[in-house]
Length: 65
Image (cartoon, rainbow, N blue to C red; front, top):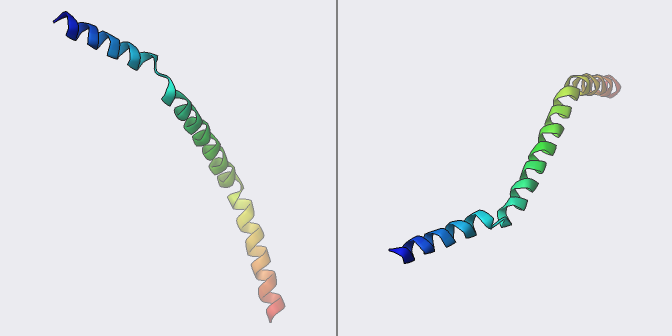
């Protein structure tokens, strides 16, 4: 019985001291924050970009006639 308890304690200690996955999680959080920043910037500028593309489209239509 003591052997099982010792083995369980050692396994729990190894599990809690292992930080190999922490770096991957940190990098994925950084990438997610950058992605959210890009999405919010695109959303903020979408209205002005739409107006520019409509102006270009109407100018091209006028020039094509």
